[in-house]
Amino acid sequence: MKLVLLGPPGAGKGTQAVKLSEKLGIPTISTGEIIRNAIKNETPVGKIAKDTIERGELVSDELVLEIVKDRLKDDDCKDGYILDGFPRTLAQAEMMQSVENNIGVDFVINIDVSDDEIVSRLSGRRVCPSCGKTYHVVSLPSSCGDKCEACGEKLIVRKDDSPEVILNRLKVYHELTAPLTRFYDEQKILYTVKGAESLDAVTAQVMDIVGRQRR
Ligand code: ADP
Ligand code: ADP
Ligand code: ZN
Image 1 (cartoon, rainbow, N blue to C red):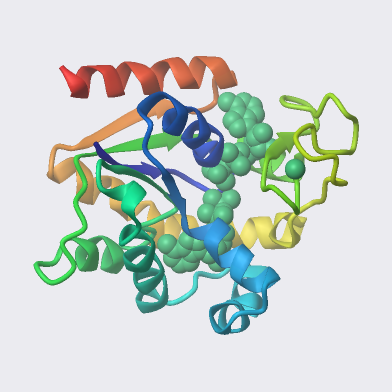
Image 2: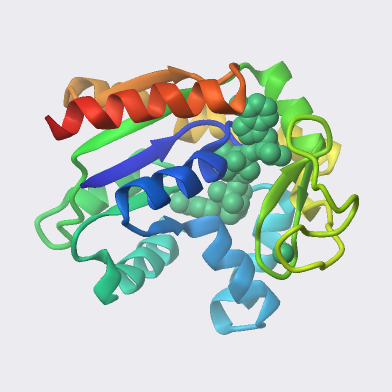
């Protein structure tokens, strides 16, 4: 099963991807997480991407495509994968499906959330800098206060979750990523869930779509 999670920043893609990966036994490829790790490790990719990501802009289509192609070579991707945060532009969607790259997509789950809700999701998001686990101050607080439940590390606010950068990311989303819903709708592989519902209610909608695909 090869699926794409689409939606604005903070829609809950990463959160739902964790549950889907567990349920389906396939890995999640999060381009944002790969890039953040590259920045942390000061790799060449990290050096190119650092300023871009902190401004809330997108890194180049060519660079992310290379990152995804590289990750897909790993053995654990051979039975399928969940793409979280890729593709994010029409050019990426077209490049991945080209004969040359041939990155398959069986279906796309679009998590639909209003801009107001996005602002409160992103401003309340807390992440573990060590293991990447994501929390929310209101909807998903850590049982260990300001520390990660999984590894005890102190939770942080992502640099791009600051108020000004959030607004820029929303603008970038509407301009460059939102058109992908139409692109996949025309291919008749788009399924939209109501992302404003509770975490569990969104998971139920997502699992329902996945269940229908498997039949
Ligand atoms: P994305 O990967 O799309 O950027 P995340 O999965 O990181 O989004 O979620 C953004 C923030 O919103 C996180 O703090 C997460 O805990 C919280 N969150 C995710 N889904 C929901 C939901 N259905 N209701 C309330 N908060 C949510
Ligand atoms: P969110 O879903 O919360 O916006 P991500 O972790 O998916 O965050 O992405 C964080 C940042 O990483 C983006 O703002 C962008 O700079 C970069 N990025 C991630 N995926 C892509 C992509 N497919 N194309 C271009 N830039 C990307
Ligand atoms: Zn942790």
